[in-house]
Image 1 (cartoon, rainbow, N blue to C red):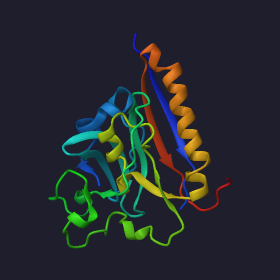
Image 2: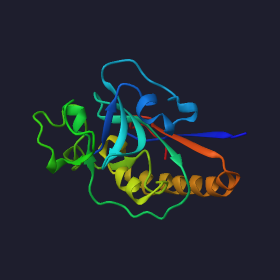
Image 3: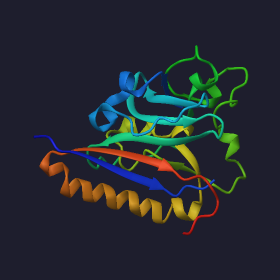
Image 4: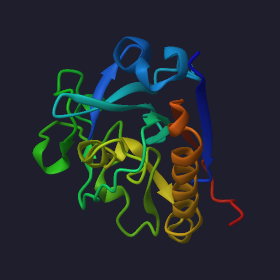
Length: 204
């Protein structure tokens, strides 16, 4: 009998990319236990994204185009891979143009009128005093390509730098280590959903 483990991490986040789909189940249900997403909010501002880089899908993100932040990202944890970080961030062309590429792109490579109308851009973080906080983290990526794919602004929300580089980084590492030692040796399938709690009133 296969035991499915869902780990829900709610990050206290204050406050390119992928293929936009009509429903997660048809495009990237494999990142959810039983193939079902935990929550789909009603409203035209929400988009379901199968995060795609070079035509490979690595995780799923439920994105709020009004607030220009993800609600949550979902992925499978498959062990510690020691991936390196990317120093640039992608965006999601399809959020601003339905006919754009389903693959994440660097902002400089996207020529769309009204770019940034429905998603965050790099300039939104300049002089903001916030980090780009990953939801699907680099540290828990399943491969080096997946680690690169986590560097999309549709997978990031403004996060207090001291929290992002301190307690949150420690928590990501501890969760990954615990899952590696307790779950993966037993061949459990590990599903993780990381969501945001928008706002500036956060106890650190």
